[in-house]
Image (cartoon, rainbow, N blue to C red; front, side):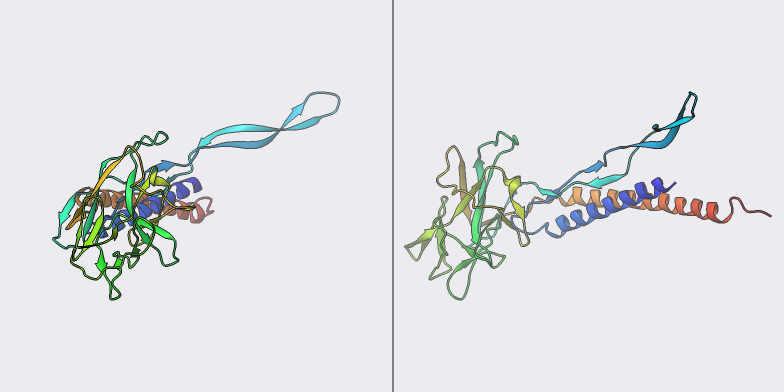
Length: 278
C-alpha cells in the first residue's frame, strides 16, 4: 500500500517540476536569443525485494541457516531528468536598431561524441569579471560609452576587452567589425562551443563554462557564421506546443493526486474499520 503512496507522489513531483520548466519557457517566449529548456521523464531503477528467512537443515541437531526468499521486483516511481537547453537556431526578427545584432550558425562542425553541431555565442563580461556567453544581441551603449548586453554585462571584443563607442550610430559588418562615425571601433567577440551542452545555464540568457574559456570562433576552422545588424534572434520557445504540454502535465498531476487520495482513504479504512470488534 505504501508503495502506491510513493509512486503517486513521485509522479506529482515530476509533473510539478516539468510544469515549472514549461512555465519558464513560456515566460521567455519573447526573450531574444533564449534557448528553450527540454527534458524527459524516466522511471527509477527497479528494486528487487527479498525476504529474510531461515531454512532448517536435517541432522542430529536442528540447524537453521539464514536465507533470502525472492519476492519480486517493484518500480519506485518516476523522476524528471536534468533540464538541458536546445541550441537550435532561432528565427530572425527585424528591429531596425543599429546596436541590435543577431548571430547565425551558417555551417557548424558536428561533434563526434554527441552527433550534434556546435554553435557560436557573443562574449560578455560577467559581474565577477569572468567571461560569459549569450545569444541575446540586444545591445545598448551605456552612459560611459561602453557596449552592454541586455543582462547589463559588458560586451567584449575579439581580444577580450570592453568595447567603448563614441556614438550609438554604428555599422556592424557580417563578420562583426564595428565602425562608429566612419572610424573602426573594434570587432565583436564570438566564441565557439563544440559541445554547447557542457555550458552551465545562468540567468538573463547567460552561459558559462565550468573551467576555462571557449575558443575564439574567428580562428576556428571548417565553420561559417555571420552577424545581421538590425535584427535579433527570436526565442526558440514554441508557444503552442508549450501550452499543450503544460495542460498535459497538469492533467497527469491531477490524476496522480486522485490516486493519492484513493490510497489515503483506503489506509483510513484499514486503520479505523478493519479488525474492529463489535
